[in-house]
Each structure stands twice: as C-alpha cells, then as structure tokens.
Length: 605
Image (cartoon, rainbow, N blue to C red; front, side, top):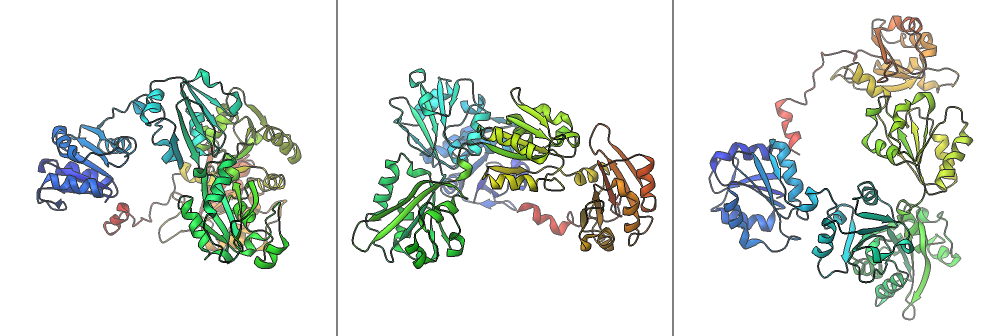
C-alpha cells in the first residue's frame, strides 16, 4: 500500500474518492462501513497499520485529531511515513510530518493540484526556494555523509543563508541542477585548491573523491560513477580480498560509496569472491560479460595468459570500462594474492558522462516557433558557450535564449570541416556546445556526418529531440493523422530529386498503402511527387502544402491531390514546405474506442 486516505467523517467521502481516483496507489480507510472503503475497528488501528505498511497517511478531518493519533507512533523523519491533514471541505491541506524525507511536501502540492486546495508547507527550505540538502542526494542517487554530529546543523546553516562553498568535480543531472539554481549565498568551485575555507561557514562537496575539509561543517555527496572490474584464479578464496581492495581504493582518495557496480567475465560468474565482494562493497549490482563483449575493448594492460584462459586479453580492465560506458580507467589493473593459489585482479573506471569536460548537445529546434523547443533544449540554449545553428532553417529568435557571454554563429556559410573545427575549439576548452538543428535532428537532420567526427575524436555528445514539422503539420491542420479502422500508419519520406531514393522506397511504392504521408524536401519536384502519388491515391485525396510551419510567416494551402503541383507552383512555395497527403486530413468520422466504458480501467494503472 502506498497511500492511505483516512476518513474521519462520512461527510467527506466524496472528497476522499476524488483523491483516490486521481492518486495512483491510494485507498480509503475508515472505521465506518462504506462501499468501496476498507473498514477497521478504530482510527487508532488504521494509524498503527499505516505507520507499518504505508508510504503516506492522508487525514481528512481536524488536525488536532490527526496529531493525537500519530503522536504515539512518531520515531524518526527518516523512517516515518509522510503525514498530511486536510479539512473536510478540501480548502486547505497541511504537510504535517516527514516533509522532505518522507515526501509529504511534494504529496501536499500534488493533492492540492487535484482539488484546487491551498497547500500549507512550513519547511523553510521549500518556502525560501533553497536546496533541500537532506533529500537532494536521494533524488540524484548520491550517498550523503557529513562531518557534523547531526545533519540538522549544516542544514540550519544553509537555510539561514550562511556563506557556503560548493565544490563540484563530477557531472550529472544533479550537478546541473545545483549550477542552475545556485542561491546568492553560495559560491561554486571546480578546483579544490581555489577554495579559501576561512571565508565560509559551510562546505558542500559533490564528488566521487575524498577531500579533507578541516573543521568547517561539511556535507558530502558521493555520486555513483565508478565501476569495478575483477578477475581471479578459479575458486579464489575471498578471505581478506574485499578489505584489501577497499584499502587500495580509499588510499587513492576514492570514495567507496561512489562505486556503482561490479563486473567480470562469464567464466567467473559463479566465483564466491564475486558475490562476497559485491556484498562487502554495499550490495553492488553485478554485470557479467562474455569474452566476445570484452575482447575488442582497448586496455593498457592486456595479457596473453588471460586471453588463453578466457578468450579475452583483459577481464578486470575491460569489464570496468564496459560497465562505465566506455569510461576512463582511474585505477589500472592491480594484481593481488593474499595466499598461495588465490590470485585476483581488479580495476576501476569512471563513467564517461560523469567527467567534467567539453560536451556537444545536438538540439532539435522544433518546427520554428521559439516556444516549441523542448524545456530541456531551451535549458541547453541558455547554458551554452557556443550555439551553432542551421542558418536560414532555424529562426534566429531561438538563439535569443543564449546567455550574454555565449558565442552564436550560423553554419549556413560553413562546410562540415569548418563547423567541426569551431565546435572542437570550444569543446577542447571544456565548454558546452549546442548544435541547433531544425525540427527533430534525427529526421533529415544531417547529423550523421557530424557524429562520425565526434566518434573519431572520442568526444562527448548527446541528442535532445525536437518536435518535427510533421507533428506541427498535424497540429496546424487540426487533424489526427491516424484514424481508427481507416489509417493507422504515418509515412515520413521525401521525393526523389538529385539524391536517389532506394527502389523499395520510391513514392509510388509507398503510396500503395494509402497511409497518411508527410513528404519532406520535395516542393521543387511537386509535379513528380503528384504523378507518383496518383498511381495509388484517388485524385480527390486531401492534400496540404504547409510552408514554414509555426513561423511568423506560416502559410498553409489545402486542396486535392490532383491539384498539388498547381498549389505549390502558383504560391511559389520553397524547400521549407511540408507536403501532407491522406484522408486523415480534416477527417472526423473515425472515433477512438479508448474512452469507451470498458477501457476506463486503463487509466487507473
């Protein structure tokens, strides 16, 4: 059971049912026998059960009753369930117990949205919009430690806005959040020797490494970014091995808490040492790889002897690198032997994504409207040190999200090599590059050649998808491109111009299905497109020529397939035109069965 809704009065049943219907994993409990409600002998029994079995208790009734009922059961904010209390009219809902750690604050806001109620949250960090230091680690899978006698002391310093130094030497979604939301009383550092601790009352460290902070109250967050690979002789005795490896790792100032996984080759899957080591290092997940998966991974210490036994020249290094997603070794292969015949090896690699280095984000700009870029894409544009955008294909307004210090360039006049050299210049300075492409970059985005360069130079890059112009076309045409029992397929393609199309993808071949077809990059060959489509589509099939979808100068022309070329030519439509053909355009006849009564259960899962 996740959420228990405690009904103290029958008069609030409708309110309780509204919450139950919208809050997944919830159930109503009461001492009254009511239809659809779990009945228990008393409210005391319900609360006792809830503290043992539920993640949260949601009282509907007077807060005094709630406080008296939960008081005997309160133990610790790290183990107590979230407790909320709301009045029977649904006007106010109070986060009463376990606000951060138990999730009561977030649940209070969620239920307030369901009911249109007023959320009452008294946690200072929530009300002052500062970081919740006691729970942020859980959110990003960081292990939290402190040198203070109690965590409340550094948290109090922070919420009271005492001067704070934040040191970061890794990278993930959590560090990005901290950088983006930094309060005014916090200074961020990326080099340890640059911090003068005498200027600060609090130190926050986000690092997989160990740092000594003297007497300054410190909160440490250790992200799980290291991957341990191991090998051993058959039936290796595990006695003392885990202590040996832990001592070696910590002597290199690496936090044991930052080890995310243990891995080896399938030949060693049943070794007692493997299971013992995983348990001793915090019940690590174990990843097993075949020799074929490991043999081609480049490692600094390959062994012919290991290859003779396992068919891979490396086990510990190769498995660590593989688990770290082609990461970098921070500890190369180490050999150990605590007793005769019990040889073992280990190596440690860091996840490549966690390394603070240059990065290239290929961002889909969407169809044109600057507000149709994704939230994530907008954030990258706001944070980028270089924005290289696709000339006249991307509205310049999208680059207005750039910070004042960013360099913004159009790639319209650049060849591929010039584009790459510019991006690499910023990348090599450990800066963030955004390559901004129209629509969704994976659909006719011309990113394949760029990614080949990035792969060749082993560069960090990622793709943020965008809204494609075919999706914008459906929205602007106010049409659903799939119609129940009529059209269930959407084809994204282009006509054959100077660039040949595969024979099996010729338009007249695709037209056989009479699906909804969205045709890119084909306005200049409109007559040829029309002729090929007419081989299978009826001549009165609806078509739309959509020019500069969602741009300020958007124009849309509708008609029938037999007039497609005429529509495009007479209106001088160019390359930025999407051609849509199919009976789904403006079709309101096919009705979905999704909202039928027999399918309502799907929405409760």
